[in-house]
Image (cartoon, rainbow, N blue to C red; front, side):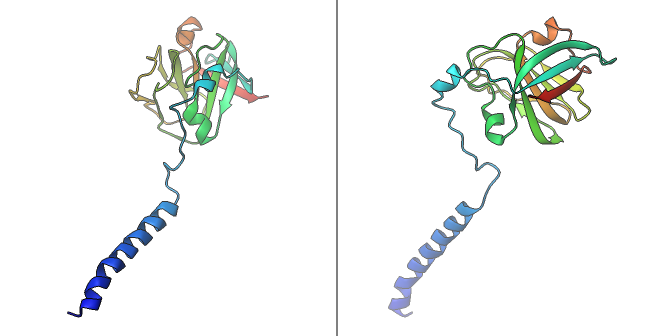
Length: 174
């Protein structure tokens, strides 16, 4: 074997590997969105900004309760949710809007307050409620059925307002 070629082979291999790493890092992956949730001291001081309203209704569409909501509709705002928030008024919550109806799963990582988390399908019917969730828990809280909306409210809200699976919602943006 020619010794000049012998020394070129490792260099060529290294060059090919570097090119593969460069190409793969340029492709957008679903998990490419990086959100720093490790140092969000300012998020706890975030003032509630009303962006819409959610109406909870019984099967006859009679109003049970109305709340003001912030709307989380980008991947970043959906991921951050109510993390680091220290309190929320009883008539406030967060409405998560997803682009398609599918199985969802939430967790309570970096979430200070216990919450009721309600998963809602495209017919605007609550399909699953996780009540009194545990702050900071990384346990999965699955929707159990496809959903396109999620509403987070203070823990105990659903019980206090007779909201259960099968209850309908409607919502509007400001």
